[in-house]
Image (cartoon, rainbow, N blue to C red; front, side, top):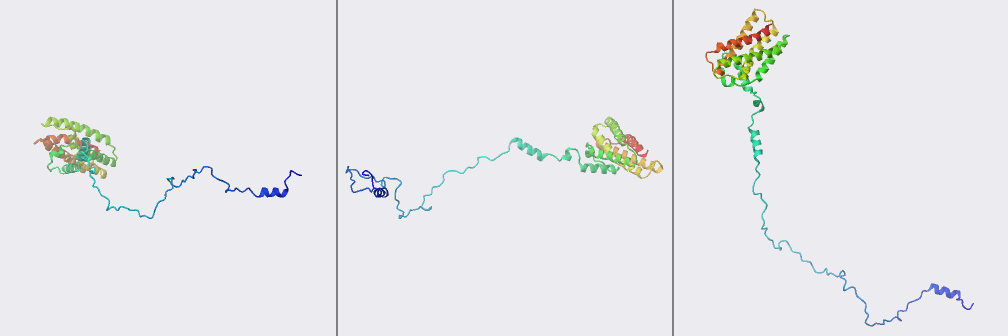
Amino acid sequence: MGGSIPAAQRRSICQSPPVFDRSSYSVDDPNQQGYDYSNNDPYNKQYNYSQPIAYSTPGMMQQQAYTGQIFQPTQTYTPSASQSMYNSTFDDEPPLLEELGINFDHIWQKTLTVLHPLKAADGSIMNETDLAGPMVFCLAFGATLLLSGKIQFGYVYGISAIGCLAMYCLLNLMSMTGVSFGCVASVLGYCLLPMIVLSSFGVLFSLQGLMGVIITASIIGWCSLSASKIFISALAMDGQQLLVAYPCALLYGVFALISVF
């Protein structure tokens, strides 16, 4: 066929690509120049690391003195008036037992005064309202009665209250200074200590015989003598001990009857 390309020529065309001839290319504009980006690029700078870098030592640096002032508080902390009052109050407070009216030294002195009827009593101590010792002695008296099979706690407290009230009225009539009910109860309660000894004897043997009568009379005289001595010294009733001892003996005689029968 006249218009067909032979097969060998077609293979040569497909296998060899066309070659661009650079010699035939010419620039029409002679003023056209290529743009060099190497000189105008700010990021394409060349640094010369051969030159040493000068470092300044601390001694070469100019030191400047600090002209300011270190912060200092102008006034020290002072506690408020309420805090000072609380601290002083806590420091000046008496012990708790003293606030409750319990002074073991005075209790011991009063007990020794009762145990020694002929010993002089201290009126300043005996005029105090101390009910700690009397309460203990009343409980001890009721406990010793309980050991002998007598449950008499109600009688003990009832007779004690009536007796204290009667002695309070009597002493206020007899004395010029007067006396408080607490002082009367305190003295009569401390002087109940010998009666505890009598009720303890009742646990060991019977008090209804002759020996029991002698012991009972001695204990009643002991209690009344101690109580009258304390009242005379506390109320300044000189020469009236027998008048005060008689009602005291009546009161302690009732306690003795409870112990014997």
